[in-house]
Amino acid sequence: MVFFDRDEMMAPASARRLVNAIKSRISKGATVTLTGHCDAAERDPDKLSLARAMEVHGMLVGMGVAPETKFQIVAKGAGSPFAGTEPNKFDPRNSRVEVAIK
Image 1: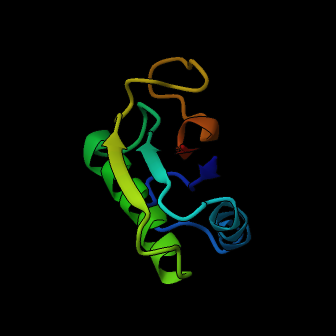
Image 2: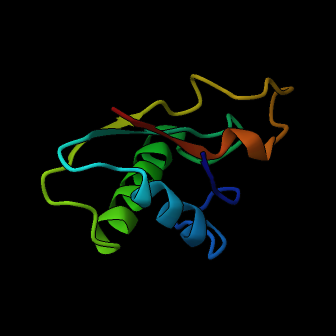
């Protein structure tokens, strides 16, 4: 999982190393599903979760993932929290992109 700061669509600098490790696990012709998530306390969760998934996609492509790689981009908004929270209480574990490689 790649975690994001509250209300941010850009991955923090610390995520680059993790995304590079993910890239090294992607074999030629693989299908990679990137699922963006938000916390319910964040602004515009549907738009933000899509932007986060697209950010990780852009990072992987920029790092030279094989051109044969197929990507599926999914935006879940605040609908699938990692951690349940009280209304308007932010939990950073919900601000993430999950990566599945097949």
